[in-house]
Image (cartoon, rainbow, N blue to C red; front, side):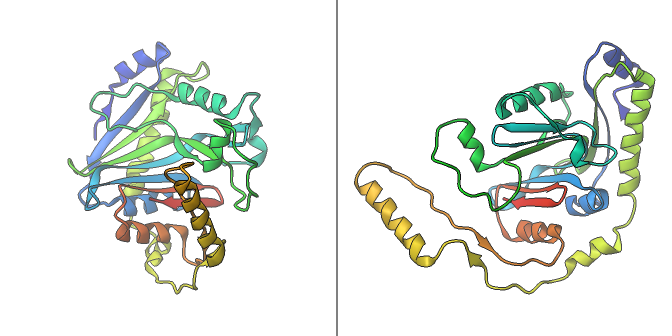
Length: 297
């Protein structure tokens, strides 16, 4: 299985201080994005799966699996932190405070993580993956005091995968990509060898059968009635108040919401699998950030 670029071209770019990617491709007609994710990420604490759908009826061209981040960035309000020692395991004590506003520090990380991809490379084959919560808008404009935080999760969190596995539904190929950023402490030969090892580890993992625990995710669950955080009467009053604002000409659109919750005893990825089968959304995502998960569309 060929690896690109050639070792000589890789070394030339590396010695010039240029960030680049090493990649290989394999036929994907016997693998699905779900089975691949379960093989590659079941034991990972930080990972991601991003899928797209076209027209609500067919799968989009690309699916992205992100693994083994070398950096994790997060913030609470204007208090950003970063962890650059994640490959041996993510520890809370390795997060360091950044003496900059959150948005500025995130822009810095975006700039630091940019890699010029080869022309034939699938888009988004390297970079940052994460989320910005609604309350991040408070860093962009003045709003009333924030509501009580009942979720206990960072306002925003991003990871920088060292492995991206990209499914192309048009060509039936899996492209396995690993970014390489030059370091004064690592020679070009060693950097190439380590990158090749990362690719080979993924190829080996994909060749293995699904574990028994992954196969057990097909179990069904019984659900209790969902519970809203807002009473029916209070929500109706919110709607009536919005109608008054519209009639007065103060607003022309408003989005009212309520949060429903219920116990869920199956693995979190089972929820994602159910969502992707039933919800014709143009985007589907599953983000695993340590002890919490984000599933959405």
